[in-house]
Length: 468
Ligand code: URP
Ligand code: ZN
Ligand code: ZN
Ligand code: ZN
Image 1: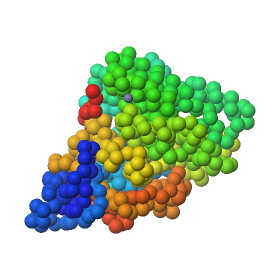
Image 2: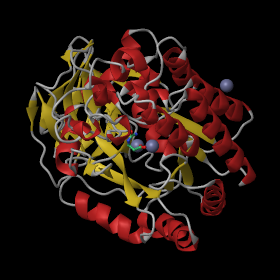
Image 3: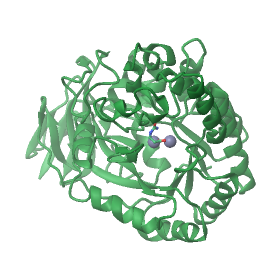
Image 4: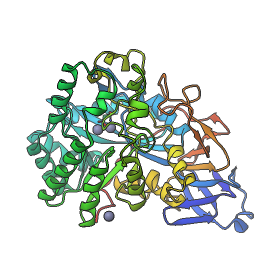
């Protein structure tokens, strides 16, 4: 089977070109001068005239079916990867979980069991370590070599759940420094936060906004700085700060990067567009829709503006979603009368490509930087490049035909995620995901879905190729 994507403008991290993309089977085989491609007769033609052709989105931070706060994230690997495909994302990297006291390999096996046969797009795993001990450290080596899992997430937050102390973090970093893996860090001072949470509840401050107020930006900045220092002590272990939301945390990352360190960070669309006051502070219990950690930040401070700047300067390398949806009914509602019982997470896997394209429309990012932050850098950072993340001969034919003249209106009535609300209800995007191709197969076209569950494959990842 040959397929020709014809008439589009191909966008990569280093520039744009008018080119037709020739696909054979699952792979891109050539980028052709449109004059030349007129002489070939492919089996299938996808019209991309007037549109952008970009590598399929890679969402490096999702939590399908994550058990959390007495419930579980509402998207399964089936519903969540289907929604991702609708939104132009053709690869996710989800987080397998080792719960404290459990065997790392058992946690991984459980995640494979959830995902296998259910994904619509290709998928890989990071591993969450909920208990760093000698066995877990040995398991890290084994996962890197045998399982294609080359990144491990630790938590400085959530004492009693996923929390690691500084000694555990240092040991995991030393192990990663030896085996080449990346340490991903949820950087918030969870011990101090728990004190603030108990004090707020004792004062009767139970509304959702207190979730944000009890997780101040200073405690994200402090934990980020501490993680960076621990990574330095571990002889510059590669460190990736997840869901960075605060200016002070960004400053710490920028400082380390200016010193040439292997320190990287991602942010998420919610921190670029939504705020403590307007969303988390919505009347009554409404704000629960936007309870996530790190929390939305104050619009009276410069966080969002600084994050956009960080995306331009590459102090923020990637935009991921941290997709972790919970419905209001029966899930977020667990926290009525006590914000600390609201399950943490926002769903957005379907909207990342559009929401960051809006940054291009607004003059915040170039087209090239858009593609880099949503696809090319995630592939390089997490050992999937050049199989993924680039429109080039030899790469998987994961392509999105993006229409800059189309529009997208986000809302619960039209999204495909398994959520009973939208975190971005009513937002209008000046652009639209048109055709989505995954390994040479058209899975979304003209508003119709042609994919199917089970076609997505597990990707064993290599080591990061992004390190200095
Ligand atoms: O609120 C969030 N982010 N929920 C998902 C778990 C995590 O910490 O990434
Ligand atoms: Zn986290
Ligand atoms: Zn800098
Ligand atoms: Zn997360």
